[in-house]
Amino acid sequence: MQHDIVIIGGGLVGAGLACALDGSGFNVALVEAVAADDGAQARPSFDERNLVLADASLNALTRLAVLAHLRQPPAPVQRIHVTRAGDFGAVRLNASDYGRERFGGVVVARDLGQALEAAVCALPALTRYCPAQVQALDYDEDHWRLRVQRDGSECTLSARLLVGADGSQSFVRSALGIGEDVTDYQQTLMVSAVATNRATDGQAFERFTDSGPLALLPRPDGLYGSVMGVAREQADAVAALSDAEYLALLQQRFGSRAGRFTRVGKRVAYPIRRVLAKQCVAPRALLIGNAAQTIHPVGAQGFNLGLRDALCLAELLTDGGDPGEAQRLALYRERRREDRERTLAFSDGLARITANPGFSMHLLRSLGFLALEHLPGLKAPLVSGAMGYRGWVPALARPA
Image 1 (tube, one colour):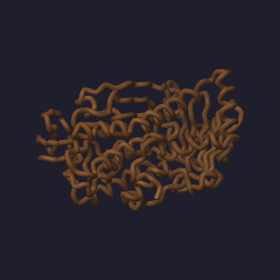
Image 2 (cartoon, rainbow, N blue to C red):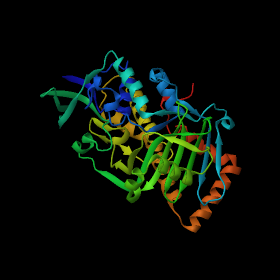
Image 3 (cartoon, rainbow, N blue to C red):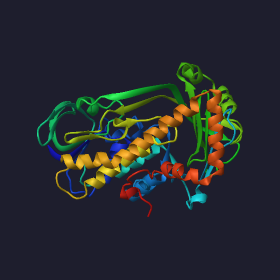
Image 4 (cartoon, helix red, strand yellow):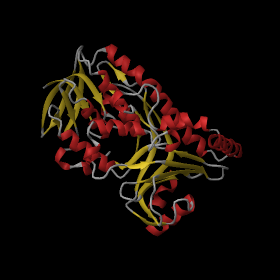
């Protein structure tokens, strides 16, 4: 089968790209490892993580009619409270101070995945191969040939543009011969929903400690999405705690800012590694989302960055022509450069700076917190970046 564009990977970013390409006039195919009728539960990226959708992402997903399929609208994040154990001061951010109703909104990855699945199913021109596995890639001068296993047999697809959206362990990245730089933070994040004796009210909390970061995010169901970082060597012991013991540890590390923790849901552990592709563009091919960059989740930038990859690519394909021409891919790389570099530097820098237990770093962080809190002009770039407005912003993501 001949296609103009073949997307490998039907997770959150791959599905988002398929939605953004609807109406482009190109013959688009989506190759997914999981059968469409298996539902979102079977897809690895449609899991229990709590995603903070930046304001730019909310704009785009609304225009792509994805959020309309959510069972509950995203819980707005209107205020953010940031502290570091042992440091002086705190940073408090309020969306109303910047003329905004929200910084973003919180959804559960599983729920967003189900909404994206519904939106993809409604795309009239999209060809889906699922469940299907790409076995090999071969390059010709004007297209890629993909050997795909499906329903116990093999077929061959061709693509003028190949897009790898197949996650951190990307087959496409490996098949293209693109290397990666890997940083193991030696941390594991414990993710769960928790209830407190206070109602959520649009405030998110981020707290850094010597043992790792913590976050509480207001969820659409009235619970908090909790994230607790632990040292890798302690992860098994923390996972084995009873619910009461786990809540006691979370309370000890977080304090009483959000009230008393009363109940915890299913706990899921995620080892944290940064995986950066050495390049994101190859002849008639590119990588987006976690296949291009898997970053530390501190600051909640990962999915938002990947979605902007997809939106930028879709916008560059609106004028027709050859989707895989070298000039177009070079322009994609240039337009994504500033956002990608600044976001990578922010997430990695924040993870490293806040984890350093040295006295001098405690002092520097405390001074930084005080400066951010009392010099409003310093907060503006931080807020703008957190809302998804770094570098060149795709039209679908811009405010109305």
